[in-house]
Image (spheres, rainbow, N blue to C red):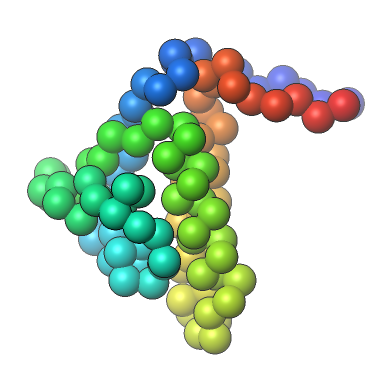
Length: 107
């Protein structure tokens, strides 16, 4: 039996604020092959209260997750892999806490 997760409803294309630590920002910008369409805002955002806030759509977060996972799966450093995996898990949980009506339900 699967328990239903309560997700905050948003409209498709709505942006949610995703915050990154200095290290997480560095991981994305320096260790993934994501392009400026995904990381442009992250590269230019200013630090606020020790974090880097960036507005992303759920689709953009999903795309970023793909780049993080690809790098984690191919990096030679176990320490770097662990950091990327932790960031991936955190962003995955964040993304899954929202519902823009675009989720595909598995049967």
